[in-house]
Length: 462
Image (cartoon, rainbow, N blue to C red):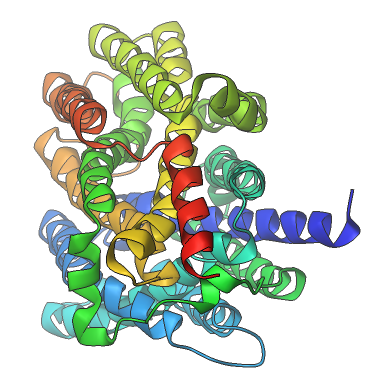
């Protein structure tokens, strides 16, 4: 094994680990902090929770319009370190600093009577966080086609990255509750101090991992990468729309992603208020971690034997079984079974989609004569951010609608379990069925077709 190649794979995997620790922290656990602690004791608690969750959704939905433009800026960046690393480092450090502020009470402003001032400060802070995170997010995932043109190496890099992501996301899921309890005074319940400690740890992990990825990776130069015009900022949306395979895949994936994060973001409510034991939430991370370390390394083999199309289809069918188990049962055994069928196959869907989006770089170049790595790969994190934005709003909406605000379960209190299950399990299952239907009927960019396109491009640019 080439040492340089292994160094690149491992450093990229570590970067993915920190990246997903951060993503979990801001997309799931931050809203848990908002609903449980940020406004605890305030006479306007429910109103402020609704305000913050609403602002997060609005800011993220507005900001994502700029993601393709960010991709264009990255694509047109030229430095001695390449076009990705500067944004990876700057974005990683700045967003790490901002997430620590998010897990605080904004120096007491959150619980003050000056709600207008808090809203203004929060909007500014969250825009800064989201903007720098976007640069880092797009730069990180856009590196894959720049690190290799071969399908096999791309799948290996993607597998290493997803393995790191799984450790980061599931590790954060497992440790979130214990960390918040351990750092809260008394060490028995979750408190604001514990949430802040979690935010600091997430910031450190992401910042360090971004530096490691910048140090250990190297862009590859080739004839194909050097050919084709670059889109300017104004033409970037036109380039995306012309890539029909990217568009159909994006539509399919956004429906899938919204469904999945709407469920996973609210699972902590399931453990806290349906089962009645928040500490069992760590089971979610344990199941996901075990499933990931088994299935993620198997992806290249499964994709080679069955093709990504069949791998993705089988994974979504398994997830639908998980939704059925969640909908009909509320016991711990049924919950664990639901987690196995729902969360474990997610990695296979993610990798199948990521590899197809990566291949659409060459598809877009073949069809339109334009090669855009960062612009094209920006679609995957853009779609996840849309889903994350909706999950933030869904969490706050469901928590309020089902009477599941606050951090502690009260025995004997009536909660809206039926309302919770409808929004957290039934609607997401319907969205996944629609997603799979679109994918099967409209996405035709297979591994074989990509190899043919690469061969044609190489012949064209001789």
